Length: 76
Image (cartoon, rainbow, N blue to C red; front, side, top):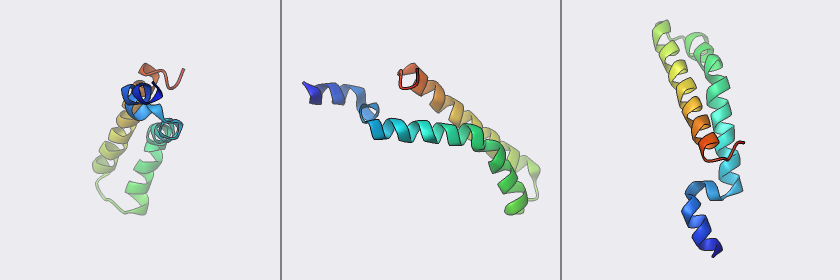
């Protein structure tokens, strides 16, 4: 019975995966502005557009992951 329940929930059946996904969502969502800084200043990328697009993409991925976790009631 428990094996059937875990196979239905997939990757969200383990507590470790839940914690990992929530942490990744938070890092992508709130770390995106810092990623823009790192790309622009530390790595010396001259085109600000590239770093802004990369930061915005990380932010969007974080929001999508956060929406997925809320939809599956991992985060209530």
